[in-house]
Image 1 (tube, rainbow, N blue to C red):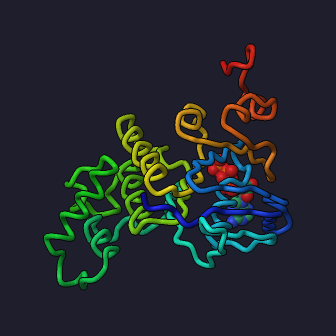
Image 2: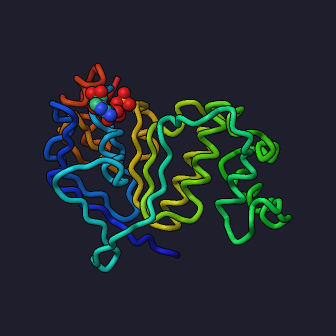
Length: 247
Ligand SMILES: Nc1ncnc2c1ncn2[C@@H]1O[C@H](COP(=O)(O)OP(=O)(O)OP(=O)(O)O)[C@@H](O)[C@H]1O
C-alpha cells in the first residue's frame, strides 16, 4: 500500500478581511486516512479555511503538514475541488487539451498522442465521466461535468492532501456514487487525508470518518456519530433528536 505523507495540524488560525474577522483561533487536526467533514451554516468560513490551507489567503496562526514519521513537509501537493470556478466560458480549450497539458512531457500544440488520450479517458472514467467529454470545450460543460473534471485534476498527480468544497453539488445521483466511491478508495489505498465540505448530512454520515462544526471557529469536533448528536449541530441544521437518533 502506498501511504500518504501528509497529516495536517492547524493551530489558532485567524483570518481577517477588511474590518471583520472571518475565522478566529481555528485549531483542528486531520490525520492520515481520515475523511474529515467540515460542516456549518452558509458564511461560517468553510471555504475560507480551505483557501487558507491552500495558501491563497493570508492568515495568522500555524498550519503544519507532516509525514507518517512526523517530519514536517514544507510544500505538500494539495488537490482541490472548488465549490465553483470562475473562468472565461468562451475559451476554446477542451477538457482533452487541459488533461493532456496536465500530464506534461509533450508539447500540447503538437496535439495529443494516443497514450495521453487513453490515459485521459481512464481518468475520466474513474469519476464516471464519458470519453466524449474530452472533446468538449470547458466553457460548455454542465456544472456536474465540470465537477468531475475538477476531481480528475485534483487527483492527478496524486495529492498528499485532498480538499473538497461541496464537490457534488451539481453532480447527478449516479455520479455522486461514483465520486464518493473513488474518494473512499483513495483514502483506503493511499491513506490520504481528505477535508470534505458538505451541507448534505447523509453524505457526511455515509462517507466521513470524523466531523467538525465550524462557525467562525471550531464549535465541536469528533467522530461523525458524536458530532451529529450534539445540540450545536442539531441547532445549526434544524434537526430533531429522538433518543439520540437524528430525525
Ligand atoms: N473576499 C472576501 N472579502 C470579504 N469577505 C469575504 C470574502 N470571502 C468571504 N468573505 C466572507 O467570509 C465569510 C465566510 O465565507 P465562506 O465562503 O468562507 O463561508 P462558507 O462557510 O464557505 O459558506 P457557504 O456554505 O455559503 O459556502 C462570509 O461572511 C463571506 O461574506
